[in-house]
Image (cartoon, rainbow, N blue to C red; front, side, top):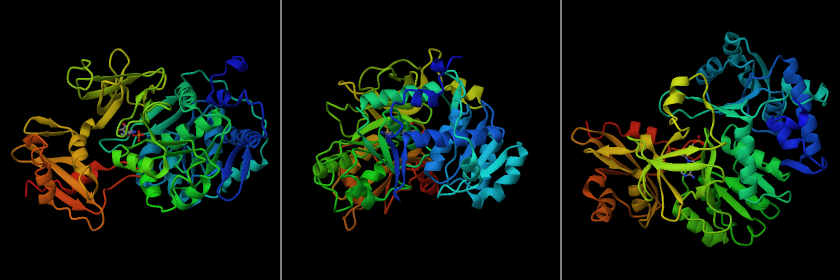
Amino acid sequence: MNHAANANLFSRLFDTLDDPSRLAIETHDGGRITYGDLIARTGQMANVLVSSGVKPGDRVAVQVEKSVENLVLYLATVRAGGVYLPLNTAYTLNELDYFITDAEPSLVVCDPSKAEGIRPIAAKVGAKVETLDASGKGSLTEAAEKADSAFVTVPRAADDLAAILYTSGTTGRSKGAMLSHDNLASNSLTLVDYWRFTRDDVLIHALPIYHTHGLFVASNVTLFARASMIFLPKLDAELIIKLMVRATVLMGVPTFYTRLLQNPHLDKETTKHMRLFVSGSAPLLADTHREWFARTGHAVLERYGMTETNMNTSNPYDGERVPGAVGFPLPGVSLRVTDPETGKELARDEIGMIEVKGPNVFGGYWRMPEKTKSEFRDDGFFITGDLGKIDPKGYVHILGRGKDLVISGGFNVYPKEIESEIDAMPGVVESAVIGVPHPDFGEGVTAVVVRHAGADISEAGVLKALDGRLAKFKMPKRVFIVDELPRNAMSKVQKNVLRDQYKDIYTK
Ligand code: AMP
């Protein structure tokens, strides 16, 4: 294969680099890494990977804290033709056992504190273990510092695997989504264009990099644009607001926006250098969108994607960014809404299953051919599992995961519809509507409501306010007032946790 034709994501990212002295990454503690440095470091790391026995197609499983070295390890794995497999830092040894046994990596990289526990697990599949800590130190970087920076990027075809990301697996076993070099490159290039990234952009990067949002959307888009990013270990509202005076873009999950809104320094002045705020990975409350606009004069741009598909839709750069909507299908992405039972395409405004097709959509689940087959239609559309609709103007709306649909007395109840009603009540921060076993109705509609401190919200008050606004079958049978909803690191409300917590309320 000639070099120019190399479809390796790394080649597509950097073969056309014209100015290696440009800044690529700044760290919170003053480190500055140019594009030239970044490429040299990935060369060193790729040489270490190859000498550790990583061959093209081999998985490199990585459970480490966020650091520049962690990003270098991702790029180096791809460069060496390996398959990068990031793992949430919260996973326990028991969970890691499942991922490592399933993925059979040839190398596992972990925090030094976990190495002892991981060694026997890695040994079962013949994987080596190397270490990398939160400050970027460990056996891996020690070896990389001594290695040669010259490395010829391993040729890969467009549909060869670049990464496997395990889905969060709130129902059943977690599945490894297989992402190709072209899935990642094509989606990032589309986003660079759609969101008007240029080399002058400075992204505040405070997302974790074991997930599609921080790893691919944030990092790949910045690097493709030859822009730079300020790499922060985690969300720090005060620091982010300070950095905004010289940054241009923030990508966050909804929690970023609610947390930043709590800070008195957030205003039009502190955000005036910024050009774009992107939100995704979980629904941004319409209220948060409006409040953000009132405080800063910026309309948050909400987009919708998932591990398996990369990004599918986005609100427009120019044009109206509609609160509560996730915008239009991205160029090259086909999106339709179908009847979940028959698979027949539905008309505008009808609620059904969202299906997508395009170069962004993954090839299937790792070693799960049956599962893969059942989640694709014969014409190649992937069944996302998200319920939604397309409104008359073409904007896509997400109404929640299909598995969160409540079926009460034989009727479909879409939680989002009830949540929107409750969220609009004065004194309510947010709500989650779930279905839990009910002896008469199959599932009983149940609302869990978070109120503003000191607000006068009660079960009876919520029910009274809903009365007459919702059909009887949609009315919650019970309303619980709580301090906060359980969320995962990507800001998603964990409805499975709530369903479990309230599972006996109608049956006891
Ligand atoms: P993950 O694979 O962890 O990124 O989760 C993907 C899921 O997150 C999607 O299938 C949606 O259910 C949800 N999601 C992502 N972005 C949005 C959004 N903007 N609004 C509502 N749900 C979203």
